[in-house]
Image (tube, rainbow, N blue to C red; front, top):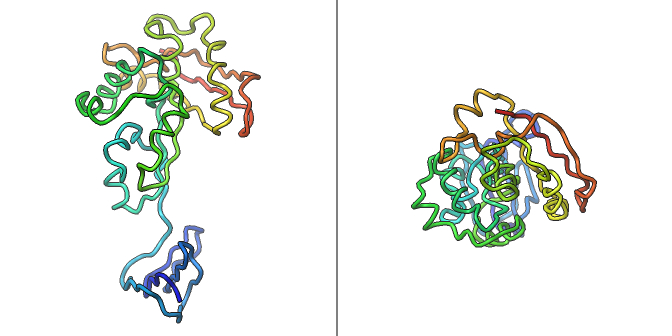
Amino acid sequence: MLDLLIKGGTLVDGTGAPRTPGDVGIRDGRIVALGPVREDAARTIDAAGLVVAPGFIDAHTHFDAQVFWDGAVTPSPQHGVTTIVGGNCGFSVAPLSDESGPYLKRMLARVEGIPVEALDAGVPWSWRSFGDYLSALEGRLAVNAAFMVGHSAIRRAVSGDHHTLRRNLPGVILKLDTFGPEFGDHGFVVDQIAKNRKRACLGHLDCHGYGVPHAKAHAQVFCADDFHGSAGKIAFTLHCKV
């Protein structure tokens, strides 16, 4: 017997194949039957007139903070989204240094329009490493999630206030090596910087009116030999200079 039968819908499987009428049979959390399904089920959903499709992947979100007070990341599931990707545009809330949390809060308030009061009340800001951030999310989410490591968070953690004064501080690239093993071990992707300088200048300003940390990087590609792990070497691509 099936656990669930979704009956009479229009199946769109995401492969590019033509849509087709049919049923979906589910047992033990897995799809075990497609097409006309005759097997009985403990529960049946009438999907007549509806499209039945795999969940959508939203590859560009800024839910990095919201996930703490809204584990369903509304309204995404209502639109069929079952997987979200955060940490886009160079913005994430990890890693943190002892002083970078308050700065990132105010930066997100300006760039993303999230009230500082919500970030204070809804986000614990108790982590330092990116792995600790992911651990803090364990068991909170109703969707699948992946997060990129925002270069603004990295650069602020490494260079502090100096990111607003100079593009490339001596030793910044060297200090980034300290994050390398963690990124590699967890298979993290470091977000790419916006290529459009005008957009970075006009839209990506921090709470003080300066360019956000990642906007101070010279156009270059660099790769540190120490950035190894189960996912292999990581290359940082820095495209924007202001």
